[in-house]
Each structure stands twice: as C-alpha cells, then as structure tokens.
Amino acid sequence: MRLRRASCVVCYWYEGEFVAHPYPGPEPTAVHPAAAEILSAFGEWVEPAKAAERLDHLTPATVAEAVEALFEAGLLLAEDSPQATRDAEVAQQWATWSPEASFFHYATQDLRYPTEEERQRLLAEGCGQDFPDHVLFTGYPDAPRMLLPRRPAELRLPYDQVLYARRTHRDFAAEPVALDTLATLLATVFGPVDFIDSGHEVLFRRTSPSGGARQELEPYVAIRNVDGVDPGVYHYNLREHSLELLSPGLTDKEAAHLCADQDWAGGAAFLVVLAAVIDRMSSKYRNARCYRVSLLNAGHLGQTFALTATALGLGPAQTGAFHDTAEAERCGLDNVGHTPVYVLAAGHPRPEPENGPPPARLDTFSGSVLHRAAR
Ligand SMILES: Cc1cc2nc3c(=O)[nH]c(=O)nc-3n(C[C@H](O)[C@H](O)[C@H](O)COP(=O)(O)O)c2cc1C
Image (cartoon, rainbow, N blue to C red):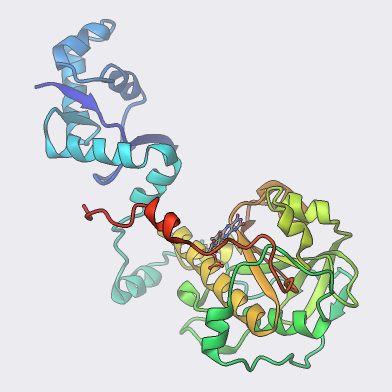
C-alpha cells in the first residue's frame, strides 16, 4: 500500500511537546521531532519500504514502527482512501489561504463545549482559578479628556428606510460632523444598555449581541473632522461617555495609510478602530473557537454602527484591510493583549457619490456566472 504525507498538517511545539496537527480532524498528536524527517520522505505516493531507503540512517524497524504510528495519527494517508481524497479536496479548495486560514478554520471546528454541569464541576475543582479577571471597562485615567454631550441626536428614521438607505460610502463631504452626532453614535453602538448578573459577576449588554456578553471590543476613535474636537486619536471611554486623548493630530494621508492606503479613508470625518481585549474573552473561554466569536462580534458592532450612522444622516464605511501595526501604534495598543480587528468609518456623504458602483446592466448579467449546482 502506498502512502503519502497529509497535505493539511501543521506542526508546533505545545507545552514542551512537538505536536503534529492534521486537519480537518483527527486530533493533534504529540510526536518525536524526528517524525518530521520521516514524514518528509512521504512527499508523494510511495511504498513505505522505498521511503525507508531514503532514511538509511534509521533502521527499517524504526521506520516501520514510526510509519505505523504516523498512519494511525492520520499524518500518513493511504492511496485511494476516503481520507486521502478529503485531504486533497481541502488542500485544493483552501490553497491560497493555507495554511493560516484553513488550519484555524478546521482546527476550531466541532469543538465540544462543556455542559453547565461539567463547567460547574470544573470550577468547583479549582479549574479556572488562573483565568484572568474579567475587567469590564478600559480607561486612561491620566489622559486629557472631553466629556461628551448627552443630548441625543435624532434617531427616528423608520427602520425600513435606514435598512435600505445604508450603503458603504467612500466619498465624503468637507462638512464636519457635529459633536452631538458623534456622541450619539458612540453611545448608541458602544455604550452599556443595561447591567446583568451572570451568576458570578456583573456584565453589561450593548445594542449588539456579544458572545458570552464579554464586550471585549473597545472603540478607539481617530478624529479628523468633528466640530469642536481637535484631530487626534482618542479612546471612547464608554463608562464615562468621554473621549480620552491618546495622541494628537491626524492628517488625511495618515488616516488613509492606517486603512491600508485606501484614499477614501482619508476623507472620512473619523475612523473607529475596534480592538479586542483578549483577557475579556479568555477570562471565560479557553477554547480557540472563541477567536471566531470575537470576529463575529466585530461584525455585529459594524452593522449596528452602519445602521446608526445612516439613521444619523452620516455615510458609514468599514474595512477589513488596515495596517495592524501602525494602527496599534497610533492607538497606543500593545498589539498583544489589545489588538485591532476591524475599522469602521463615517462622515457626511457627498450627495452624489463619485466612487459608487454603477448598477448592473444586461451585459453585466450576461458576462456573469449566475448559477452552478451546489456540491
Ligand atoms: C468585513 C468587511 C470588510 C470590508 N472591507 C472593505 C475594504 O477594505 N475596502 C472597501 O473599499 N470596502 C470594504 N468593505 C465594503 C464592501 O465592499 C461593501 O460592503 C460591498 O461592496 C457592498 O456594498 P454595500 O456595503 O454598500 O452594501 C468591506 C465590508 C465588510 C463587511
């Protein structure tokens, strides 16, 4: 039987052990680091005896024993087996995003959550005592601050109008955004709505859902064109409803640069960088799937931001493309425990957007693939 190394494998050291992690499933296995050399002899379909010839500094018995263990662990696959077919399919489909995205996607699939009973038992046994505290709010007590007005700007447009009026804007007017408008937007999207008793501690809720109500996403506001606010990068302190100045000044060029040099971002009145506070998630969840939840949370906040900005007469935008390191530096984030995950933007839209896409016409439809049977 000919064997080949699985295409979808990531190896790493974890708690002192060398681990080979095939994906999708089976479980990761701790192996001797020399296993990597043995696996390297199986780059294409080969009989184990033939592969052993390439490993002539090892005895055939050692190779045979290792091959058996690597096969059991799903790191070597048998020719024409369902596992080999699946491995090839995943490798081909995810090729351009591999290994980073495919590994994260599959390694966090089908994770079993402990039942509440199991969780309580684990807690009673002392598990979780080394978890970080859940700290509800971030604040910069020494930063110069502006307490924001609490006079709400009007948010009364009918829901259907807001929903269908929302568009991503990339063309902004020079008119500054009123401070009341910014304050209303920040409070509506990021401010606490109410406080709840989780059974262990107080948590708060926002207008957007948040996995486990961890509210791990902190808003950092890079202001360029807001009435009465000096350009600069601020933290929105949602407990106090204030802007805390972290670093002064913001040019159009820099705003665009922070958003991966997308020119439109330089015209926005302000950007909001959502930064994940990792401890707020890991204070409850040890499971890597939780990172997915954090990205989903960012999407929810992004949608609430876009709808609220629209209802306030602003043009919203958002970008997944940004210079993470530059952004973290500008917001004073360590990019370790506080790390940027999403950037939102808004400003007064130009009445006739110049950069908006034209509507699709008959020839656009003709040149597009409209249907393919699902696999
Ligand atoms: C997660 C996410 C990331 C995006 N990133 C960018 C981006 O980097 N640059 C950009 O110009 N638009 C970006 N957009 C906007 C999309 O291009 C836009 O939503 C899409 O064209 C549909 O248009 P609509 O938002 O007006 O419905 C992003 C949207 C989302 C939801």
